[in-house]
Image: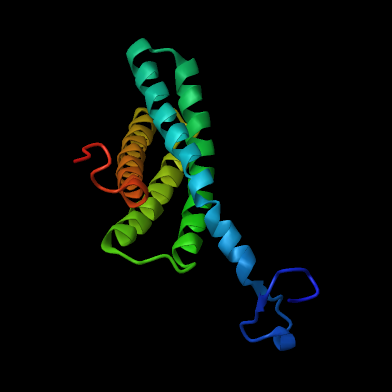
Length: 163
């Protein structure tokens, strides 16, 4: 045990080179936050899609603002959830094909959500609005796929159809 309590330093090159130590237990803790964090971007990105759909159907700009606020928040938390997920997967849980699919779908979802957030600029040209909508649809699709595979990892593939 080190002087900092129960933290055990895993030195990559040690402190000889002036870098701060990497605490393995802190990395594992950050990874274990993945199940807590992951639900927020799922909800925020889906609400963004619903808000944009309502904006399209009603022509009310307030719903577009709802969509933009939710995709921006969702993209930020999606990146945090993706990083936590990679840390969690690296903490020694069993590797499987489903885990690899979930890792890459989750990473892709975070990237596409960030792209949707970046396309939600104030420039309301027809091309930019459609680019935002397309990236938002892409983010919703990939988030849904990543969530489905993640749920299968946690609950099993036949959770809804028990025998």
